Length: 536
Ligand code: GDP
Image 1 (cartoon, rainbow, N blue to C red):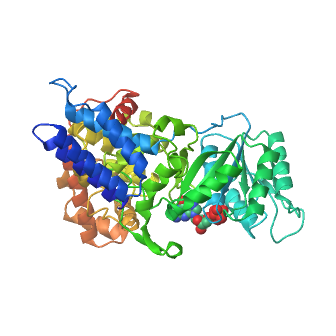
Image 2 (image 1 turned 180 degrees about the horizontal axis):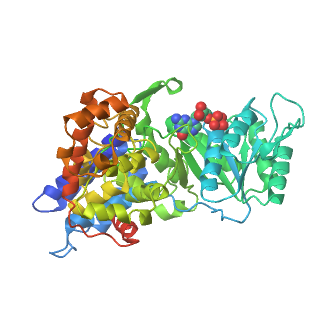
Image 3 (image 1 turned 30 degrees about the vertical axis):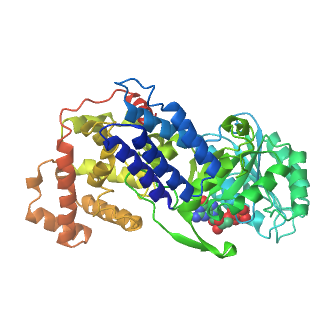
C-alpha cells in the first residue's frame, strides 16, 4: 500500500467513525480493524500493530467514558499518539552542541547515500552557524574522496582525505589534504585531530560502504570507531530497499554503537502535506524478485528501524525494547544538498493523515520570510488591498522556498488566509484551501508538473516586470485596459493572451484577499504558537 493510500485509508476510517451517530464497541472495532489492515498491508510489523490496537482499546474504554466526553476526539487522539509511538523511537544517543567539538561517524551500505548525506548533514548545520568539517575515511571505493571533495567544495566545508587518483600531497583551499595513505583508520584519526585543532564543532567521518557479509570491512569500521571515538554513529539507510535493509542494519548495530539513523531517498515517498498525495510509483527491485513500491516500504522502514531494525519484539512490552531503538533523525529527500529534512514524528504522522505539517511550514517560512518583516504586508492584507505588487512579492517567496511541489513552500500569507478564513481546527478544509491558492491551483500547479509551474510563475513575474508602478500598486482591476495590456505584452515579448491569463490569476487571488478585510493582525510570536497548537 502506498503511503498516500495508507494515510487516506486511516483518515477514511477515522472519518467513518466520526460520522457514526453513536460511538459504540462495534464502531470502534470497525475503525481499528480498518487501520490495522492498512498498516499490515504497508508491512508494519504485526507485533507493533497488535500492540497499537491493544493500547488504543486500553485508553479508549467506552464503558468508562462518561456521557459528555468527546469520544471521537479521544479515539482520534489515541490513534494519532499510537501511530506516533510506532514511528517514534525516542531520542538519539547523543545530540551534538554548537561550539563544542563532536565527532560523528557515518556508516551504511555502499550506495545508500552515505557520502551525499555526510555533506547534507554538514551543510544543514553550517547554515545554522556551526563549523563542520568532513573527513573521508572511505579508501575502499574508488572516487569516494573525489565525490566528498566535490560536494564539500561546493558547500565551502573543509575536508580531509585521500585522492583516489593523484598520489601527491596537495594543499588546497578549505584545508583539503591529498594523501597517499590508504589506511582508513589513520586517515580518520589524522582528519579528526586536525579539525579538532581548528576548533570545528562538528567533525563528520565518512566510512566505506559495506555489506553484511564483508567481515573485513566491518572490522575496519570497528577500528575506525575505536580510534576516533565518535560521539555519535549514524547509520545511513536507503528507504527503497525496504525490509531487506534490516538484517544489514542489525549487522551494523552489532559492530558499532549506532545511535541514530538517517533514511535517504525519500523523494516521492513522503506525502508532503495535506493536499498533495504521493505519487503511486511502482519500482521493481529485481534482487528480491518482487515488486516493491517506494511508498510502501517507507512506513515499514521507519517503524522497523524504530523497533530495533525489525527485530521481533522480544517480549510484549513496548518500553522494554525502547532502550535498543535507533531514532530516525533526518530524511534525505533528493540528490541536492538542501534536500534534507529533520525527521519529526508528529509532523510526519500529521502529513501521513493529511493534516498538514504546520511546524515544517513555519520553520521553512521563517527561514525565508522572517515573520517580523511581514507587518506591512499584513497591514495591506487587513485593508483588503491586493495589488499586483503583493502578488509579485508572494511569487518571489514561493520561488525562494524551493520546490513548489512541496506543501511547505506555501508563503506565510497563504497560511494566514487559511487560519483566518477557516477554523484552524477544521483540518479537512485544508485541501479546499490549497486548491484555492496560487501554486496549488490546478492551473498553476498540476501535480507532478512542478517545474512547469515554477516556469509559469517566473513568466508571470517577467510580465509584471513590464508594468508601471501605478499598475503594480493599484488594486483597481479596471485600470488594466486594452492598451495597457498590449503595452505589457510588447514589453515582455509575450502574447496578449498570456498577460490576460496572468491578470485572471490576479483577479482570482484578489477575490480571496478581499475576504481578509478587517482581519485581526497577529502579534509577534502568535503565529508560531498557533502552528504548535495545530500540530499538538
Ligand atoms: P554511498 O556509496 O553510500 O556513499 O552513496 P552516495 O552518497 O554516493 O549516493 C549514491 C547515490 O544516491 C548518488 O547518486 C546520490 O546522488 C544518491 N542519493 C543520495 N541521497 C539521496 C536522496 O535522498 N535522494 C535521491 N534521489 N538520491 C540520493
